[in-house]
Image 1 (tube, rainbow, N blue to C red):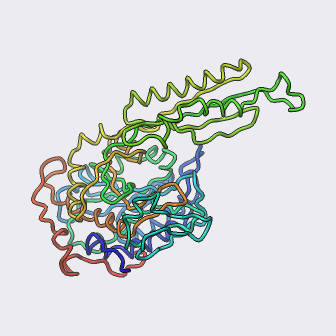
Image 2 (image 1 turned 90 degrees about the vertical axis):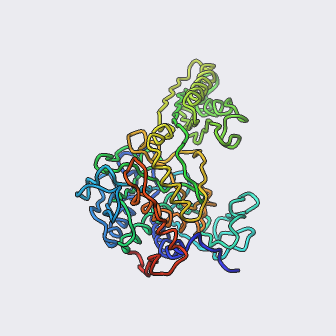
Image 3 (image 1 turned 180 degrees about the vertical axis):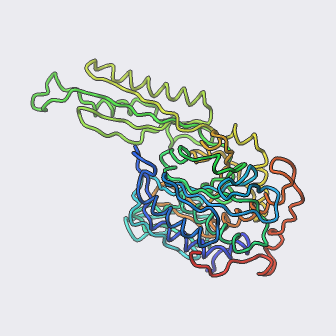
Length: 466
């Protein structure tokens, strides 16, 4: 069977460079750690950041640096457009456009020793991975069943792949390297950022928006082909701590108060058919206990609470706290502490103030021959907090699937389409009359050249890691 066609010759020309980069990046264990003591929370994120700094410099970008908190930033100067501005590589000016992906992977799934395997021209059916008995079965993954003929990238089966978000990192790196090699292609001033600790909700915490200097930005952190998202969950975290009374079990009669048992009862008392991730969909929120740990003396429940509506989110938090108190108060010798922390808010209210950000992305996706898929994210991105902080940041697809699991996979064709979309997004912004106003006829220079000659497309050379 031949491999499936790419969305454009441009995407096809980017694919192998993107794949080589992706395979390099996933080998670095950049798994985040909860309860971080510093930024980034793990040294692997610094290691990946240093590699990206070298590659960005090799590609010819300006103002490339990794700061003391692990954030990697760089600038690609404007070519023949109206959206750029500013003379200093760091102060990119109010019209610059940002591209953002995150360095870390989830702390909830093994990551050490990850490698990216390529299953060329997928013929359909179950993919048996070489380790851990892990299978990718289209019977439970309809997205996989729709990718017959695609080149499917997976892990070995005993770690996650890391497509969230190293597919986004690789897409940005391939796109900006291509743009740097082809100064004939119009672009605004582009600001690049790779952030640490997004998976634990800290990616935007130390992000210096004034120094970044962009009108708006895009996280490349979505999933299926064509996704364009300007709405996320609003989110909170709950840490419930129960202190019991511990004694030797042989002398425990009438004395022991087992905190671990009380924690189990709290979780069991929560709704199990209306407010769980596995029973909700679309715009429905949930309460998700994801960790119980401790001893008879002290136990902790960690949970996340999600909803698109802020009032419903607050109602879910009240339900969680009320349930914990009702269970624990039945044992007067136990003590309870419930700590609720806001993580991020639905970013739509902030992004809708800059409608050009979505309009430009829709035009770029269509220029790549893809129909945009407008669905809210049942999760969050760095863009959730960045938008609230003043940098409107929608989210664009990467081609990855089954994030945060041993079954994580990606289509090479779809990853390449993401990189090509970034290039077309740059062209789209470059041809706008003003950052917030109307735009000139984009001319579809790249769109028209997608089926043209190699010279008109500006196909990438065999550039290795450059």
